[in-house]
Image (cartoon, rainbow, N blue to C red; front, side, top):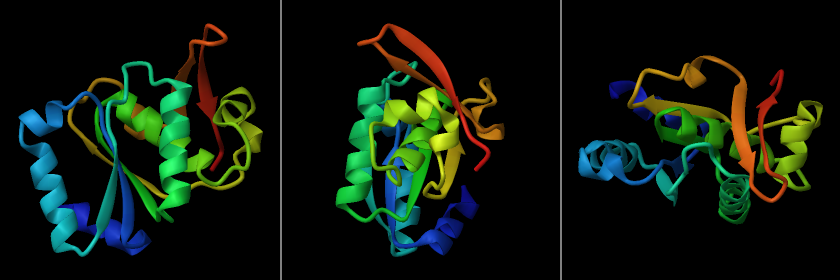
Length: 148
């Protein structure tokens, strides 16, 4: 966690992406936000990321990024938070529905920088460019991929 302050190289406004709140119970949230504060970084929260993140959550995160001129996305948690953060980072730079990016990864032309504090080593999401996103409206759970 000591390297978290390196996120400042991307800018001073960060979207903090996390799940159901276990990071608040176990103290990681306080540690992360303390480091961000000490580094002079303003953070905005996208909390409640579901297992098998939903496209609606991605859209909510992209909207927060656009409205607040976010410079980077920080996922704190496991694979779901990281997967959500990946697509949020691309959707924030895309002028259209986030689901388009899941359906066609070639539409991902740019993305915000993404960093992660991994709290569970199990998914490998932090090591690859793939993300799994769910769309309950179309009853699809698909992987999004990009060469970015």
